[in-house]
Length: 236
Image (cartoon, rainbow, N blue to C red):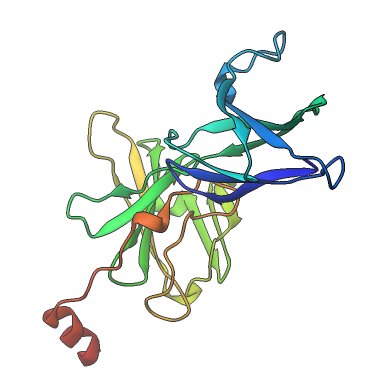
């Protein structure tokens, strides 16, 4: 195959597709597909960890399932005909994480380096939480900078979080709060409340910052607002 990649990617499944290069118009070619978790790769043994998924596939795509969430995989495909087998074409991909639901089922989100985040399933609000701050941390030591498409958090000049947001936010409507962290870990945590910009009821975010771990939003459904919530919006 001259190209190989994933067409769709979720937490537990992914569709693999490739482009064939027939040796001639008279040739009938079948495909062999292997997969392995990247963690099983061994530089000294290129064949270690591979699992055969198919060896007589006539289609040029294959649905890979079940997979493990948040896991990096290697896949390889080669063509086989009566003359023998081609060289392997390889690629790698990472499955998305499963969304983490709040205890009340109203929010869903995920985690990134040093933070967690959750978006509301009824409205356009989302909350970013940075934990593990020293117990001596005070609000005046923190700088939270939010632009329509980016977020940056610093503590005494050191960057705690920085990057391009998946989507736009209303940067003039940002609130943040520094509190004592709950649980045995102690320390303090910073919670930043943001509101997505754009049309209400827009798509769910798969990640907070571009390039950070993604969640599988295909399983999320927007919750209907109740009468009290609708009336409150009208009154404001």
